[in-house]
Image (tube, rainbow, N blue to C red; front, side):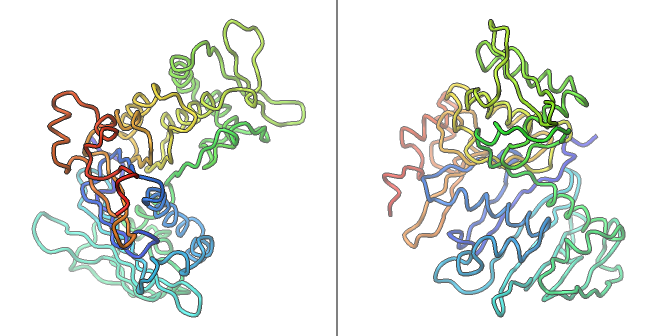
Length: 398
């Protein structure tokens, strides 16, 4: 069996999306972390994935409206389309597929100016587009393995606001298009806060944590009923990280709501989650994401270090890497302790140039970084000691 059985994004290009005037990431790894000063563009990269996901799960119009339309979305002082381009493989044996999306506006409404998918079937020959749309109309080649010689089917969408991949991907006759649609609609982007995990929701099992973590008791209930061994693993890890933690229980109250209770040794009575520390709840929530029995194919985590003890962060980075065997992880961070657990090819440093646009450098490509690490240095320490070519907010003010 192939080592990689889930889709992997290997390349990202973004143009005219807020501070990302012309950003390009090559050779993206299964675990990828973004580091930078406040305002450097970390959250904006994160939001590119959220925007694309919402275009597929809700609609282009909703995702566009939510972000203040072109007035707020398009890079200040620039004209032209917003462009998002991904290169990905469905499995390690699959050809590289490029997905291109260009969005423009007319009469205060967004529309898909261009959308295409291309690939090269063999190692030789030039790439060709098996889906090619402009302004709501275009052509698609159907079948498991679209070939340049195959018949091109002309299609017209109901509106140029619709995405061709999202619309045509609902049909079994376009399996490659469907696979991309499933991939993007299945992304999980986490905006966890400890406060949200303290809610007392309606009882009922839920398989996956919500973006804010407000259904944590429901996920614990699901794991308890359907995957008790997974829950045991999560709680064993948690108890090694949190001294004296003994048990986590989700119990149904008389009014049908679900109560999360946490028991510490040596006390006989558990306490309610709302009185538990932020760090305990946050770590529990992250572990349910990383040890998901049926993980999403891409997971995004914003600043997981918040509320966690610094000594727990290198281990969390290791857990993220282990989880990346089954999913792709994108993480934003400010923590040298989390960065200590990373490899130089996994870490990208963001900074603003003199025009205010986000630029990016991978630490593996920075002079001396690999050599220092071969001598036993850790990435977080190198960053704090100013060995990176960017990433110091006190120096990066060009």
